[in-house]
Amino acid sequence: MVLKHSLCRRAAAAALAGLLLAGCTRPAVLQPSSSSPSSQPAASGSSAPETGSGTSQPARFAIAVSEGSYNPYLNANTLTEQVAGLLFEKLVRISPRMELEMRLADSVVSSGLTVTIRLRSGCTFADGTPLTASDVAASLLAAKASAHYSGRLANMTDAQAPDASTVVLTLAEPDSLFAYLLDLPILKAAETASPQPTPCGRYTYGTQADTLTPNPRAPFPEEGPATIWLTPVSDYAELVSQLAMGEISFYLAEEAASSAVATSERYFRTNTLLFLGVNGSANNPLCATPQGRGALSAALSREELAGRFASASPATGVLNSLYECVRGQQVIAEGADPGQLSTLMAALGYHWDEASALYCGADGQPASVSILACGSSADRVYAARLLQQQWEKAGIQVTLTLADDFGAYLQMVQDRQFELYIGEMKLYNNNDLSPFWTGSARYGLAVTQQLLDAYALMRADSAAAPDFERAFAGQMPYIPLLWRGGVTVSNRRTSGVISSVSDLYYSLAGLSIAQ
Image (cartoon, rainbow, N blue to C red; front, side, top):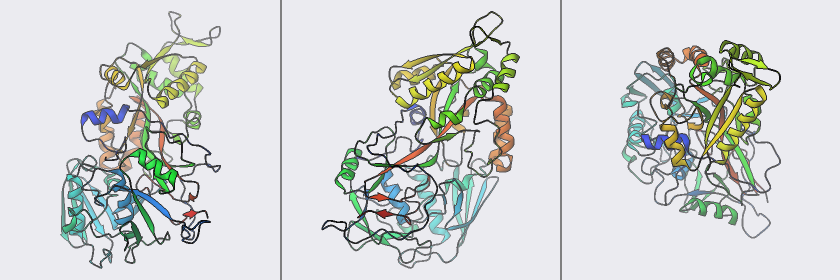
């Protein structure tokens, strides 16, 4: 059985809709870690102990694998992708703070429809073979042809290696943030179809078939365990049970699953956005006008909302706030803004009624909205109720509509039978927003040509991102709420693994295994 992450990719329109609307419940945890979750890298420390653990068995760090292939371009499997992060180096990677780090690439420059990659000199594969631009070009073309990575590279039309240290990519449309998509495993050009390609990363295949050992020729060596043990699993239930049995030390939790055996959770930042879809054609000025959507945004506290979820941060703009191009320049407030709310409501013809503690229209009827949520998703229902509390406290009545199941919910969204709905979208790491303009999240959204033009300018030049943020905040076709985090779990003995949206095993330098 193939393990697939529920929000892993957007391969087709139907998959996009599922990505947008599917339930996402973090795992339940017994005896959670007493330390607060952090996405910051741990300080470098000694490698995990390989000596006795209080029993006859040595302490060891074990991870899950899917049998049959270590090549992520042959297998649409997240376990293969995760292990590939240890075996194969990438052109770039994204840190836990969403910072772009050059790895095999010395530089990546996007200009119009061309992306030019200059490679770092002196990098080799584990067998000593030089790593060249031909290997990179072949790897990217293999990724584009693969089931797992084809969606993220849909905008790339070609990859060529004009010389040994330069790769030139051709795009269908400009993308100034394309470099964020290049956290992809690099394989030998002749081995892109091999189930066990020659590594070029931190680890290589061990002398025992079920182990990985440090790669002495790694371009970026790192402290970590001298041996990583590999445990084959066939499905998520086996993954959880193997953790309970001590055969696995650490894994990425499925978002729709619950584990009663995990003893520790850790969170890392992702580009998964929890948002409110808004029906701009609804017969409600709070939905149909930019002022109304702005008022709804001003009436809520994203900071308070984020505090009620295990791993979330306020979405203070349309792009992830940690990205350099918008850092410190977003205009949506974390907290509620009663002054702005009052101004916008007055512009819409609402006045504050002291007797009812509500905003009311000229006809005396209270301002109100309805929120659609999928009744089978605990997270969505919870978010809807939190919004209901905040808005009613601010003077706007809220009606909740809970669809019986996902199918009914999706149909109601597609038929625009809503004023607002709770949705979630895992954006690609270049913050491609096309699902909101032409894809699965477009239903009911009031998107103007002015906003699309501002988006196109930002795509062509990330320096225009702050202007796009301001244009978006002025129109608010949908309402960003939170950036949700990824969840990893480990057994009682294991700690110190640092993960990022780019690499589950971003750092093992601080790995510790209790005796």
